[in-house]
Each structure stands twice: as structure tokens, then as C-alpha cells.
Image (cartoon, rainbow, N blue to C red; front, side, top):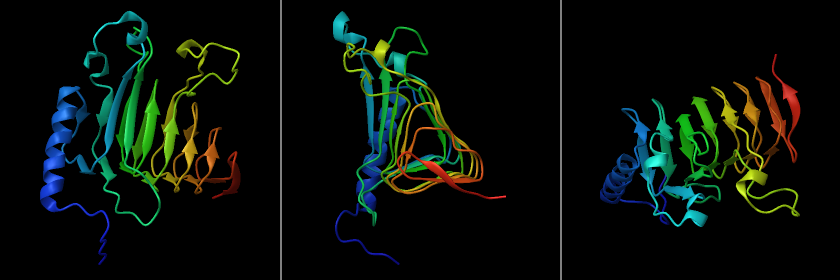
Length: 214
């Protein structure tokens, strides 16, 4: 039995927070299945870059159906963790008028103080283990060539896929275009910029395969 005297929520506080979170998810048209749960105070961010020049008012319509929490999904964001981490943060970025020019986050696994920024697509399979403070990004935050204007057209984007039964260690960062193979392990604090084959262990910055299970 553990007892934490720093950041615990009471049962009543968690119930109030859950009511607010699910009300918000309903308002933005998120899809969630029976059994999906939220513990604590995750942050859901909707960013619409198309409004910067147009001056149009913000609308949730382009984001409807872009959060998908399947059977087995949950979000832990209580702060009650032995490792340094912040709240779970899930961000969708809309950067164009077309339907696919907007982030998409789908998970069948429990997120553990996880941060995801999606301008295209992030899909997480079943039974994926997350250490806290993992960061997943399917887009560059800014153009790598700093001579170019800082606009979405100059930022590279590519889908991220994490297959079933992978294990992503504390503080790992997974970048655009990466597929993490099933039953693979990403070591703590690793930076993953290339695909990880199934049954492999990746560690380091940049991440390299250090072991493969037969």
C-alpha cells in the first residue's frame, strides 16, 4: 500500500474532474468507448492555425472525431508518481482547410502523464506500457531550416504508430514518421527518430537498437 501526502486527489475531487472532462469531450465530439477512464487533470488543447489570418471565430467542428479512445484506453494525470512528470497533455493542431489537415489521436492503451502533439495522426495499439513524461510528436514544431518562414507548409509531418504490447520508458521522445513495432522496448530518455522493429530494444539519443529478442 502506498500513501502520498503531496498531490493526492480525494474521491470527490476526482468525480468532479471526471464530470468536467467528459462534458468537454462530448462538446468537441470525441469518441470514447465503455470503460474509458480519466484520473486527475489532463489537458486537452485544440489549436487552429487557420484562424490566425482569417479572423474567423474558433469552432470545435473541425476537431470532432479527432480524439478516439478505444477499449482499454485511459488517461492517468494525477501527479502521484515516483518519477518527475507533468499532467497528460493531448494537443490537436489544425493547419489547413482539408479534413486531413488536422491532428488525430487514437489509443487503445492507458496514457501515463503522456504528452502528444498531433497535426496529422498518432495511433497507439493495445497493451502499450507508458512510463511517465513520454512525448510524442508527429510534426516539427518549427522548420528545421531557420531561413524559411515559420508556417505549416515548411514543417515536416508524418504519422506515428505504436503497435501492440510495446513499452515506452520514462521520458522518451518519439518523433514524426516513427513506427514502434509490437513487443518492442524504448529505453528511458531515448530519442526515437527511426522505426523500431518488433521485439527490439532501442536506447540512446538518437535511439539505436541495442538488443533483439528472438
